[in-house]
Length: 185
Image (cartoon, rainbow, N blue to C red; front, side, top):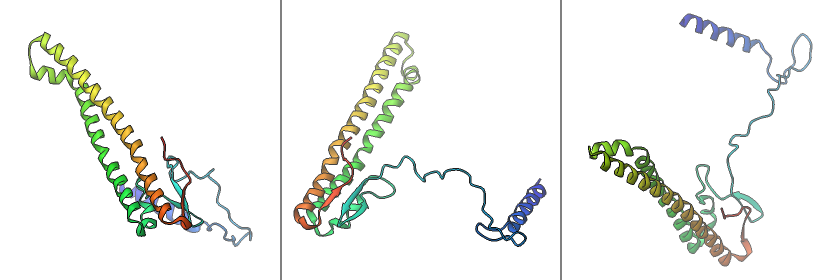
């Protein structure tokens, strides 16, 4: 089997070595070789929502490539400590919202594992049914509460990013920052 794969690899490399590269002229015809098109190119990240800003006539990214963290504003805010404080608070609050994800996951666990937990706790059927219902509603309430907490916390947190830009613009009226996106949900 290994010999088969090695043979296929050798054939593929020798065939690709004989093909002319894109834009090269073939010796026999003198025509330019163009490889066949495979269709439209696929964007690198089609779900990326880039938050842009305009500063000193340039369009810059507000965030890093990893998340919507506002870190692209930090070099601009270096001489404005009030704006940096708001940016730091914005970033800390984005990390705190993870607590909602953990509690929501716990709520889903309670909702799904209620029969197992009820069977482990009691052997009386009426108590078991009552405990299952209680765990189901508790898990559902925790999950919904965590989702509401997370969404409202993130929405309220965007005000810190807006305040950071406002603080910068107050101190630097000749070099104002203009968002090219909405910070609302």
